[in-house]
Amino acid sequence: MNYIDRKEYLNFLVKHKDKQIIKVVSGIRRCGKSTLFDIYKDYLIKTGISKEQLISINLEDISYQDKNYKELYFYIKNKLIEGKVTYIFLDEIQNCKNFEKMVDSLFIQPNVDIYITGSNAYFMSGELATLLSGRYVELKMLPLSFKEYVSGVNNSKSIVAKYNDYITFSSFPYTIWYKDDLKAAQDYLRGIYSTILLKDVVQRYKITDVMMLESVASFIFDNIGNRLSVNNIANILTANGRTTNDKTIEKYLQALINSLIIYQVKRYNIKGRQLLKTQAKYYIADLGLRYLICGIKGKDEGHILENVIYLELLRRGYNVYIGQNEENEIDFVASTHEDTIFIQVSLSLRDSNTYEREIAPLKALNNSYSKIILTMDEAPVKDDNGIKIIYALDWLLD
Image (cartoon, rainbow, N blue to C red; front, side, top):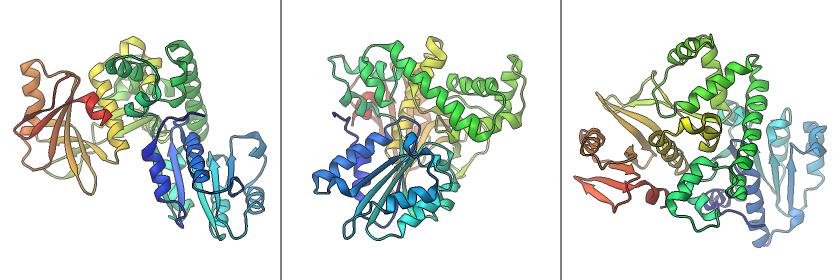
């Protein structure tokens, strides 16, 4: 089977191969976790590992759903090959109650290398560290990047047309096979959306008002990149005839964040070097889902570009915040332990007033960190007093 090249994720697994640590791959449903395991297993076989050394169990498969953690443990233990490393792949592990007991018991066996995936809140909270006693490394997986998407589509469209397809159809890997059939792609996305809301959110958090949950999700989708507070959301929904309160909104928002369908980005006071507690922004895991829910009215191209850039920064390993420097806001402060970048995102800088408005907050920064503006204006890289202005699609494909 032809797989889309997901080199960065594969390299993570290869780097930790045969290390005495559990490898955890987390991510929203259908982002490609199981396929990544298939790609990795192909890699292992090419390096001389026999198929008998690979044990794969998908806990969504009905064949395993009646087995408890003890039965699964002995089932796997009986398949271990003495004197050789056995690579154990456990998919959608959250479907096995007390899975951590099975994993811990396998972990202490000689010559085992364990890989697990999961989709929901276990893998976004302190629960995982507690359950696995801190003996794991985590790969946080996202749907396709724009670069991965371009490598997977087989057509002669321009790069701009491919970008428009990317933000309309979806970044979920399977939607590539629908080519130009938007209706079929949206039918597929509707299934993902329903499963996330009903299985990962409603069931897990025992939510009774499903219509209110859908209203909150729809509101966030429609307002990506805008400053929002819990009180603000509650007031707007109430004014629109969906009476609610801050406590309910806070609970539903956290549930949606834990399901990995939305991301909360907090504001960071650059001068005071501290996170601010109010007026966070939200972005969504896949813009195809946004188009499905919001339709053409949600065609806010500037905030859509922000969303794409935000997710790409996560893929590149950055911690991302909204920068606040006195009265100036900077779209993203992206940092690792080695690097910090200040980023403005603007659909176009051709208007001189827009240019000055976007570059002013970066010029006001009194530090030597990298500063860039990403725009959809197709032009060579420009340098304005150390601030680089880069065509966003070139940056995404870099």
